[in-house]
Length: 110
Image 1: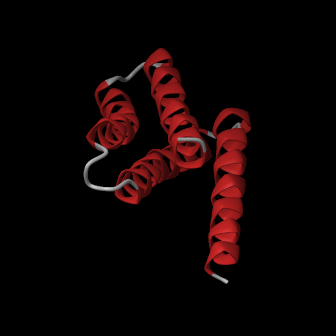
Image 2 (image 1 turned 90 degrees about the horizontal axis):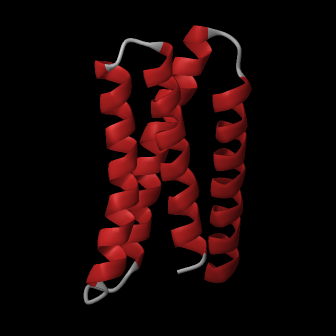
């Protein structure tokens, strides 16, 4: 029963991640892009938190790796807030996407 619920959770997380990544790069409106960007940055932090808390307490290296993926989302937020150019926003979107993708890979594989 519990493993079925975990499978449903992973599937929902995968769908949210894929749809968010698609919207992040294909949405045209500036307001919509920013809303999806902030959601994906927060989603990357949530995934990092879930991944880091899923490891036992003596798996320090894996926990630090998961928190590092969450730090990518924080860096993406800082780049977007401090940078005013379109290139800075693209860099922030790539960092947020990397945070989500690497976090999901760490959650599934490692």
